[in-house]
Image (cartoon, rainbow, N blue to C red):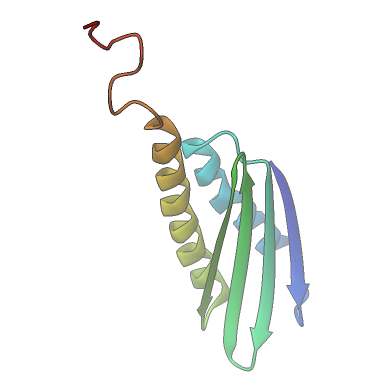
Length: 108
């Protein structure tokens, strides 16, 4: 998993980088095929905003979250991405299995 962190009107500290990496490992526990993650941090007046785009095979997942504290914004962002990854994984797993597949159909 490639991780790209950028800051807009904000300098990224090593503690912030480490926190994001530790939170995004939860995503790789659910789904191993995450290719690329781009995270953008920005500050607008008193609002801390975090945006992330995950590139997985066949889809791009995007989420953004804003809060007064950057760490709480990261927490809620990882929760959103986690739900999206689980939903994407379920869609891939359920593909063409509603009828049981061709091998398990009765011959008439």
